[in-house]
Image (cartoon, rainbow, N blue to C red; front, side, top):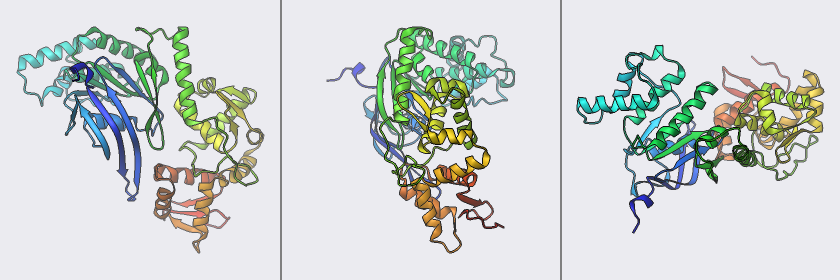
Length: 439
């Protein structure tokens, strides 16, 4: 028989989740997720946007139900809201007309507690997060960091055994975020709160390494747990230490392999030799950002380490990987191991003027199979144009694990720039750009 400590506080078993889109298509966000939170756990769900991190958190909180699989709370099937969980959100979500004290006390409104117990709990939470002296302050008087302290106190005041943190530091400046991370871990370790387990949703690798004992790396299309890394560095963690740097590099490498694997891709039979045979689409990134990325690589002599590149372009690591992936799918860069290298196409592109760049992108973007298939679809229309709803439905059939609306964004923005497609926003129609006048 399991002892109480052996039973996970929360557990997901083979959980999958689909969402119904406005077009009627289904988008699979999660597939086969297994995850358990036990007493003393500090777990980070780490992955790029679209990997289903926040969806996992909402399922474990009971805010949404899985399409399939089991959700267990202390070994029993979860029905409705999980009463063992308190949440800290990315947005502060404070009532501007309420004071700090009142915003925190509001979390206890659904709970049947006497006034003295409410006062004691709120005072204890305020002391834990360092808000003494700000009890009567209004949100407009607080900095971002102080507002998030109110959010943390509002979660702690509920005295739940599990604390969920959904990217709570992403809206804060670097120094404030660093301070809050350290303080939350100290509070958790002090035993001054009933919270026995932390789950942190993040796309920030250093944040995961600073806080978590276990790092679950999420894959995409659909979201799944790709790997688990045990982080046994002692607290408080020294970010300048060699072991910390090694752990960050290890996680970097795994994330990179997840998004831009080294396995060679077969080439399609087009004159530009675009590296694409499977139906894939470029990440939903800005063309100007990809061009900036290529120019940054050129400034480094045509080759750079992917971690250094992230610093050079001022993007977080996840955003950088999406930009690199877009450039790689167009055969503008190669990515052996942790290095990003301009291909011959990439060098010609960077050195060319705007007309040369647009001409190259016309061929490179037009060489992607998904773009070719959309082009064939448009050619079947007498007017060479179709409503975006029709294309969205087809994209949903071709790429069931992709958000068809995001795919359409790419087809429209990149298609316009490369003059492969045109788009009429009034008519909501996509058309083949063959030089015709549009009205």
